[in-house]
Length: 226
Ligand code: MD3
Ligand code: FE
Image (tube, rainbow, N blue to C red; front, side, top):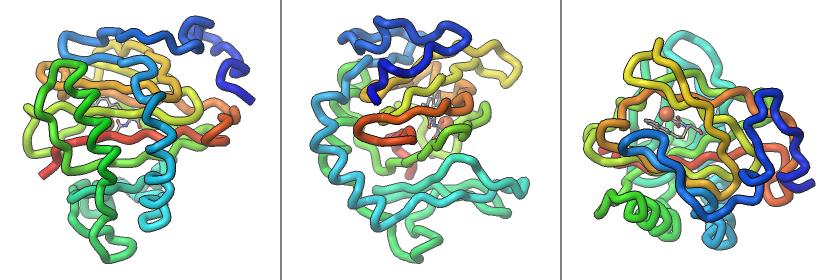
């Protein structure tokens, strides 16, 4: 099954032109950009490295401080990985499951993140952390802010792989209206500056099968965490 066989959502958010992934970028905010299909030429080189990282640090369903198991599977690579448990959210140099450092960030990951940040006008971005989220059908991420990083001046770069998802891009307050943005395989989002602390989330993933990734969406976020 190809992405373009995916049913149009009831909200009419997936148009034929979105599914063809034309080379273009959409502004989501003053300093937030979707680079449509930016990573497509990189994916063949990325996927084998992603497999290696996930063999060393498999996806796990973390428990939030509130005691809920997250529907999204999480892993990390790089100097810092993101973890959560009953005592809170934090970055750690050690994978609490293996008790070893997180796998190193593959060179091609860092190169892609730097190229995308550059294309969006954030030069000299060198991430030290890559969070890897796995969505199976039904998995979602509730509205939240990313504020565990030390330096909010650095942008965040995200790469979407596999099944399409609807990303929610909110405002500076949880109660602000959200934009609904379809994200497809190969799309890269870069945001920083005034948009860095905006609320965001992901609607429950719809069923489907992606030719390269199968029945899942994997999202990589590149950050300067430490
Ligand atoms: C906008 N992941 O891991 S990535 C996360 O698709 C996370 O898995 C989502 O939110 C996902 O924390 C969205 C895009 C993203 C990430 C961080 C942001 C957008 C953002 C921070 C501020 C504003
Ligand atoms: Fe986030």
